[in-house]
Image (cartoon, rainbow, N blue to C red; front, side, top):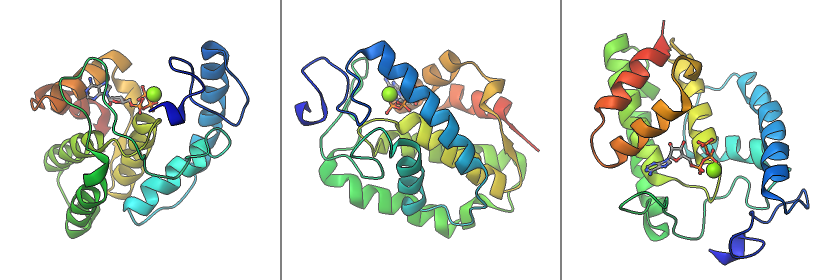
Length: 190
Ligand SMILES: Nc1ncnc2c1ncn2[C@@H]1O[C@H](COP(=O)(O)OP(=O)(O)OP(=O)(O)O)[C@@H](O)[C@H]1O
Ligand SMILES: [Mg+2]
């Protein structure tokens, strides 16, 4: 993983030339917030891998050389019992997820209960893919906001706390999606 890092436990190599973790976090947050607004103004009608890569590119192009590109190293969260999708399977697995999403017409024409069930399944699959070296949470959430909009609903993550969401993501990754269903039940409205 060292190829992405400035040093062994330092921040990721970045175009901002920042090495202090707190300064970097602050600068990254400000840029990503502005770029998020750009994406929210788009009128997207196709929700495929290219669109996910596009969101990552726009959010992170001023920050990382790898913006818009799938990771080339295996990654895991320190507190997780299993790693995310191995690099060697990323392409095939993401094709499977996005083919299924296209076959379901990007989840249009579902009543709200079924939509919530489906978006939870998709959120779990995308998190398990974790296609990028960094920025997966932000890119996936924005992708899901845009998709929900297209399907005629509203996805508002401010309805849940960050801790609640991350805890539910963890539990779902360990194969129990009950908490995540509650989270999306609160966050998705008409
Ligand atoms: N132990 C875990 N098991 C499964 N998923 C996890 C775990 N810890 C975090 N996650 C998921 O990974 C995401 C964070 O991944 P990453 O750091 O690539 O994204 P980010 O955009 O930088 O961070 P964030 O989502 O916190 O803004 C979280 O949003 C959460 O969904
Ligand atoms: Mg992160």
